[in-house]
Length: 368
Ligand SMILES: [Zn+2]
Ligand SMILES: [Zn+2]
Image 1 (cartoon, helix red, strand yellow):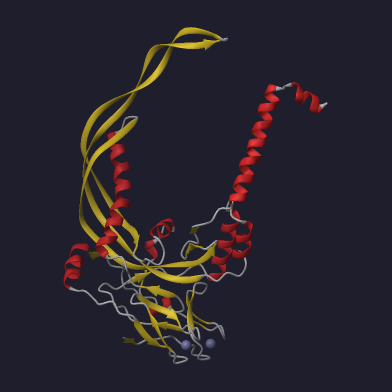
Image 2: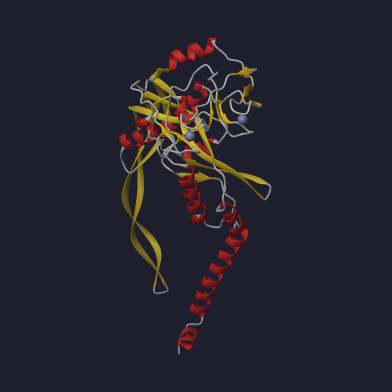
């Protein structure tokens, strides 16, 4: 199906404009003219989770590939149903199209880390990796192109009330008789030993969560998206197409309700900590937890991520950089040669000490 696409052009030379994290404005790569993005005073709103679920039940957009025509070279190309911006595969001109999903992203975090800086951060990261194959380090520290994405995320606020059941463990000491070896001889001695007394407990805790973020894209794995956190959502800006110009961006492919299941797992970890703190004592066991979520709200937002993938020994590896903070994360291959060499070295050193221990004269002999 055909879709309209737009792009922004330089008033000075007519070349395409892209968002530049350096100037936080649209920038022309030919004549270096910057065009500032009008600051919106529109507030970043939270939306009712319940109302949205009711709405989603009745509305369902069909997923269709989008056919767009480049405004510069007139080439026609197809993008996936969830893509909202990309660059023309023929001439590289930004092409921005419309949202299609039931819920639109209303705000975003603009890129703050420029591509060059992201590249440097990545080089540093790969250089700091232990046991990475040297050949890989060489390949990746070369001029490796990173791709900039605005990936959809859900943020959730929720008030939780959790009833729990568990046990509180208190440490106490007892004196017991034990057989011990003293100067090579067995002896009976009284020693102090720790024991734990478990007492059953029941109770309830309340928590409030603000902006639990969950990746809503399948382009990068959840594991990678989660390790890119934290995102500082207090600097979200109202959505404006100018921010995504030159970058690939997507609509959500993980729904609002599915996203909330991931959010629950994240909240669960915090709730457990709150319960353990409330139980007190030296150790805590939680056997049952029942959580009610109320006044849940959400936002659909776009977060900036630099990403690339590389093939190593026929396997694909992904890595990503948080475009707001510069935090690097990724999957990585290990060099077994390096690991085995290290293990052998340790064994030789330990073996040497064992040998010296058994032959104490050897050291004297060596040092004289
Ligand atoms: Zn220009
Ligand atoms: Zn083109």
